[in-house]
Image 1 (cartoon, rainbow, N blue to C red):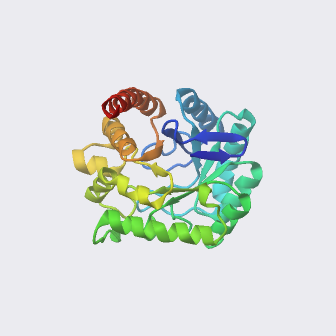
Image 2 (image 1 turned 120 degrees about the horizontal axis):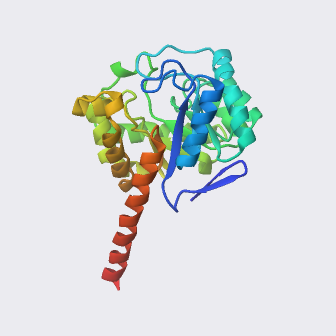
Length: 287
């Protein structure tokens, strides 16, 4: 399965891809303010690319639980200079982490390659049309409510079945709006309208979402489900993030959205060594 992003073609079958998180925000839960300046953000993105990032995902608005919304104008002002610098550098495709159609439109016109909408195209009614017109890939994430309300909306009969059902509806709506089926990626939304236990269960049963017939993006990086499960602060959640990523890949994830690109890339390379050995043993057994 290939994903075309402007002049870039990424093969999702060859190996899992790493999407590096670039928060150009003052209030993200882990690295808020660390890369808020244009030059700092550009240097960090370049470092993530050197460390193995296949895609850079740029966000100008925090969507952590309880965060406040940012106006489209402020969001564009934060991210546009960084997008322009990275487009000049032209090393990897750029994804925009936004739920606003005006922001998506402006950045796609500037040359960005992909949209990552945490609301699954539900926050802004115009977003699906912007994505369809742009002809770009889009990540449809599962979330209920908004960042301000989502943690009050964690009631599920069966979290995996319900998330799959709701994602299927979002995918159908995207296709009805004119988005090409091959441009749709799904994300279970770890930590978004999910308790810690529900997030763990979603990763453990991620393979059930493969029934949707879309590539799966997984974003467990240093999130609160790790903190609540193991009693760790964000700065101490790397090892648990790596474990979550590898379990996710073994359950079908094809894109990992992470802060720690170098560590995750190395873990994936080692996992692929073992996976190659497993495939060899399976072929031997079937001969």
